[in-house]
Length: 501
Image 1 (cartoon, rainbow, N blue to C red):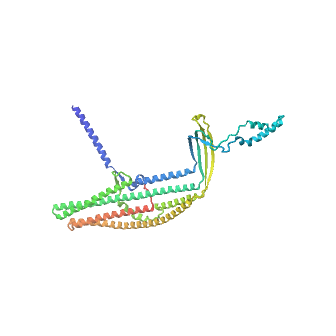
Image 2 (cartoon, rainbow, N blue to C red):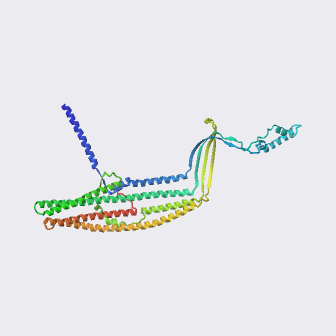
């Protein structure tokens, strides 16, 4: 009995150990997080984001269509087979009201034959009387068969079988040749649209990543402010317990802590929302924990250098490049439409076998071959003016696109100047906020020492703490707005992200 109890205890211990191990593994999996830097985030977005994947598939589809267009240049070969069953045979009519006289039909053939035979008999048969042969034939020839228009006879057989090969290819087709260039430009447009999607996705990921850093820095600012307020509260409480400060100071310190708590909670919620937005862009599960490396202050060292390097042309702007490709598409379309006025030449051939029978004894069928090679030339003469109207429409579209491109280019130049001005303003704000942080930190240190020595008041220290918090927030905000403007400018200039790896 005791041995059995010991075994039960051992089994229970093992079961508990297994449950604890599984729980620990599950907790470990839940707490595992993915660490991201900006390059890694962009790499994931380029491979996992649905928008980028759809753009890549569109390129694939256009390439297949382009290859399919070349297929029209090659011979088109097809194999065919057919069978037909005659329900009622065709009726053939020969002759009319005057009757059908087979003798008269062969008169032109038989008369020279009779004449030659008569001459031979006269020379070779003694006593032969001329005309005897003709009279004998006429006497033994039946009268002609007469028929009317209502009479006829059926023709054909019940079963008709056929099968064979047919092939054809264009020899001269200018419109087809021009359409191949049109298809190639269509592929180029799809590639540029995919590039535009990637540039736009890069901009979104960068701004979202900077948003996570801004939210994290803001949370740290409020957390630092909360820790300072809590430290002040504990210090004042100790002094109050010793009777060194008034109760008003203790109450004010407690109110300061309570006033910071909502901002701290809001900042924490902002971090969560910013991470959700980034994970959605990266195509990640929203429940997956991520940690974004770095802080906004890591970018301050290169602000001025990056600003000086922002001068550039709009040659790589994706919108302008798409308009240029669309203009090229219209030029190719116009060339195809003009080619519709030119003649075309087609080469075709047929090789078939056919058989007609009244039964289904396939072994006895006689198959008759039939083959043909044809060279056809087609010259369009008149189509009601539709081709000419299409050409006019295309020319109008080209003029519209040219006007649109000029308007877009002016808008892009304006946006470029606005981004540059905004970045310049951010740099000035950065310089002011950087000095403001230094002064606010110095002021807070002085205010605290004054309060500790009794020379200052709690209100001064709270004002210094509030000024320090605001200065740090302004410092982070200036860097964030600069980086966002820089990302928007790079999108405008059509710059693609290149990883450092």
